Amino acid sequence: MATDLADKPAVQESSHKCANSENESAKDENETVQTGETETLSKRQKKRLLKNFASKLCKALIVPCFMKRQKRKERKQQRKLERQAQAEDGAEWTAKKRLRRSPEPSSLRLVIDCSFDNLMLLKDVKKLHKQIQRCYAENRRTLHPVQFYLTSHGGQLKQVMDEINKGWVNWKDVHFRPDAFHEILKEEDLVYLTSDSPHVLQELDEAKAYVIGGLVDHNHHKGITFDRAQELGIAHAQLPLGSFVKMNSRKVLAVNHVFEIILAFLEKRDWQDAFFTVLAQRKGAVPVGQENKLGEGNDEEDSDEDSDTEHLISEKSTDSKDHLGSKEEEHKPDSSEQNAA
Ligand SMILES: C[S@@+](CC[C@H](N)C(=O)[O-])C[C@H]1O[C@@H](n2cnc3c(N)ncnc32)[C@H](O)[C@@H]1O
Image 1 (cartoon, protein in one colour):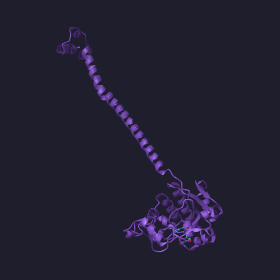
Image 2 (image 1 turned 45 degrees about the vertical axis):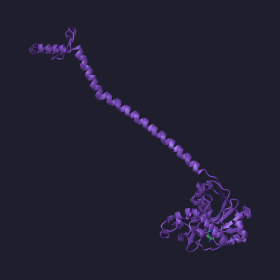
Image 3 (image 1 turned 180 degrees about the vertical axis):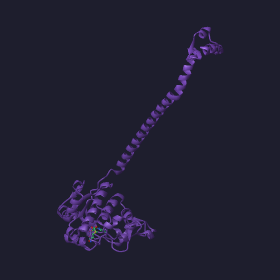
Image 4 (image 1 turned 120 degrees about the vertical axis):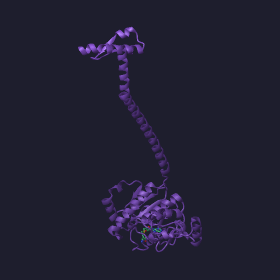
């Protein structure tokens, strides 16, 4: 109690000071509030204190909270905008891709003659299967897909396909036929592609059916497709490889290379371009003047294929049109060649 009595005047004095300094009315002074044991605050002071406290609390807790929420909102909005932009880009990209990729099928028929099945060892049949898979894949993504035929389809090849890749039954736009090609296609439309033909292909006639021997034989059966074409009395021709590519030895290509060169020619209408598009990627054929780099481009797939294109080097001239011209002079086509070309 002694402390109470001793302290009270001091508190009242401070209360007065506070009131005076803020020019408060006497009414306010009378309406003091006892706070705890030592202080008495006017209502206004109390209000101010509370306000002060609330504002500090607000700054310390509510404002950061609000700011955080605001920032979160902004980030969300930003992400939404980014997603929208990406979706638009994606749609544009897909549309462009579709535009670029929308295929215009060629009427040219490209046949793989699988009638040599019994001449191959199983390991070579498996290689042929891989090459056929490649032909299919390339034909699916090219700009001008051909009418793809697999004739005399049966034997070991069909067995391998059934075992390794049952999906072949769902392949789109491939005519699988157990019959021989000459039984289902018109004789006058047929051109057997064979490296042993004396006729050199100049152009592709999209009304024709070009036949590729479905064979991986490491050239053990040299001339077999040429003989077949002659027996059947149908046109035959070799690709104009010699005009554009230097060969150290044979110019026998693998089935898929021949197939892809035809696809590339349909797109580029230029043999040299077609040869280098297909062969340079796989066989390390190099542009003119870089022959010393020959062979650097060989890849693993080559080991599965059946050709001598490792020996390819580029022809000295770069002008494919000149080559076509000079080849035409060099090689005067006879009637069957006219038929072939
Ligand atoms: C690996 S080769 C088969 C070689 C086989 N000894 C032969 O006589 O045809 C696969 C097929 O590709 C085609 N081919 C390969 N090189 C060719 C070329 N330079 N010109 C035309 N066709 C070719 C032929 O139809 C050939 O039957």
